[in-house]
Image (cartoon, rainbow, N blue to C red):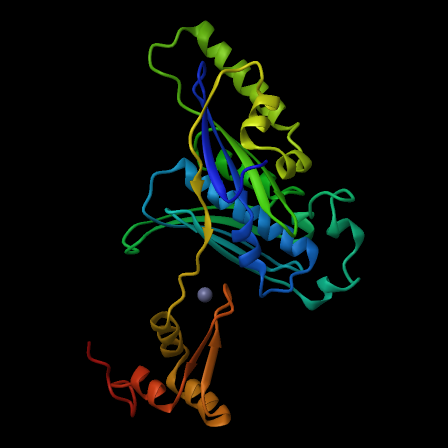
Length: 311
Ligand SMILES: [Zn+2]
């Protein structure tokens, strides 16, 4: 029986190479439950969700990691977020045409039955990785152009351009789950003999080649242990317990109120006058927040009639 909804770390015993396997099952279905995403958009989002978890597994942080794709194509925005506790959420915006036949077969699929072509979906644009601490006091951001058919290709560019550890990712998604594997070459220990460094390079190259043979069908049907045994049967691996991953939206009534405040009193009151209440649905989880006249007055208390808000 295969593993579900978890992020599992593993180490090569003889080389400074580590990896992670990720499975997003129930969490993935909860994430897309209220959305009617066209298949290529859904699968691209699934790959991004798997990628954020894999990236989050490699860094020590306390906050939120975001992976954002923006471009001029029929899917202009894709956003996946993961907390340091492996709670994920995500969304994609797409042109209605993507749901029909307006987009060509090339953009739908790189190959029949495999993954969406990301460069055709997002168009010319960029991939941004953002790391924000919980209190938003610290922020790291890396930006690279989108390139290649798969999200993993753009992420490859991200790792090469941001002077991070050499890293490879393999990502998969369908209606039932998102999954993936990450391999990362760690800095060699000091005092490594030149011969050992060559050994390490060979081992890293070989690990990537073996990683390239991982299939979606294997991820769908086999347990983590079995996958790693098949891929790296010549290597001694140490497997750690899987950390649970889950769907978690961070929206709240307070945050939505702040959003209405930013939108402005005039516009908010216009909606209130027209509909009797202001309803805002969270883009991530579809939860509805309703504000009546009293709530709206409370949000804009101290800012009306040209007054200056004093906090
Ligand atoms: Zn939400």
